[in-house]
Image (cartoon, rainbow over the protein chains, first blue to last red):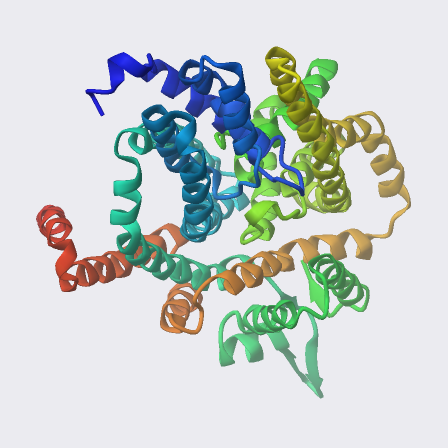
Length: 272
Length: 267
């Protein structure tokens, strides 16, 4: 790459960093149902592409190409876009088809891994810890989460750069290793989720069993003796099945639980 | 002082959505947004209790592939503002935050969909400007996108800031105790939705053992989540190193990992 650099263009480290930040800011902020993140890609890359294409017509053709449907995990997109810039730098407008094929080919697999890691596992693990600490009025978990986000912010700028310098080669090489990593993260995630059920879902039965002289609080003397956190576990299974069956929307399930809580509160079945 | 707080809360609402969809630093995850809102309102402890409740509801609610999900960040923000303005009792605050926050968070979905529809026009306008050779104009058009999304959260927040606490005060005088108690109970049950939804995305059948281990340690032994997370990390790390050393292609990574493993044994 170094031998083509001085002659064909003057794309600097600074341009790359600026493209990364521009894309990262816009990411889903121009999201629409037609071409999804494409406007953000154009917004992110248009400054650096202008440096590559001095000719207005080539510039338009390249940007029109980037206006095509694009959607992947925004954190991972940095790798793809960095590599796209490298391809256009090398072959100019001839690379148009290749850039398009590369982006469409890679965005699916990267979204699969990326969404799981970035939007499911990371917020689950951090959210469980921060949310649980939060219930006790403690912001420590939230502060750690915020700091990690800042670290990831710089890491993602770096990802764009990595995509630009080693592009295609790297993404294919990482492929199967990322899968092992995702599996391992799932193991950790599930352990935490299992622990969350008794820790955060609270149901307290207020009823007492009355037989002559004897009163037996159902919650502490019966349910807890069979299994601690039995009701939360049952509720989890029920809601899990409900969501899986897709018969009720998420919103309806939420309102159903609120209604159930209100009814149980009215009849004194459940207490705070 | 109250005016400044109100302005900051609305500004935070505007920024929240832009950050979640872009930089992902402050985000709309309830814990983080709740902490910032707590700082603004001068009561971090109450804010964190409310944020924690919403955070656990929000688990697993990821806006994957641009799908629209209840805006729990908005729910948290509005809930914290109204709750701290109207009461200083934590259980009450939780019930109020839930009563105000959940509907507003649900409204957030509708506005999010609307924003995504409107952004089609932004995309078309920008592409049109490009083809006319008006590159500067194209760049300016893109900024309408963040403006639309910012308003989808800032407008509902503004309405709650103006009317929210008045409505809640009236409600609290009228509404019976079983009702606010019921909302508090719902608050302790609703995290189940997040957890159950999360499980849909995870390989539950394959790693059911991990789920059970986590449950048993927490329910029977009462170990805090952080401790269980470390345990979970240990399982994950073991799996990762085993897998890596068994695939011949990844020998380089395997050797790198064993040295890390050695360090941990020393501690």
